[in-house]
Image (cartoon, rainbow, N blue to C red; front, side):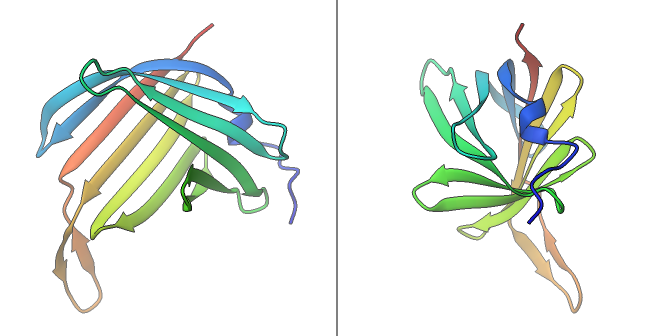
Length: 151
């Protein structure tokens, strides 16, 4: 396993980020909440703290994850949510992608670095149709944040 990549997505994201998460359902904005993201190298090799604070007045929440570079040759990362929940993620052209299913809901997640902005999106939906060669899923909700790097 080669861990000496020329590019390292997590290292490029190090720092403090702030933005507003907008939550959409069926094409309409439903809610918003201020969000902070902290990305910091840990003492473990190829591992970063990936902590998100949702600054909601009604329901504040902290998600304290770890992001680990598993294989630089294939640009494969692992997002460790704790409690045994791990999401495989794949890096292409300044964007980290995850696709997973939980409780019969299909989710896509991405982080895209564009200069001093980090765009985070999560979509979710359910299986709506199985055909011979294609399974279709709805897209029922979107969560989106455009983070700005703090100086």
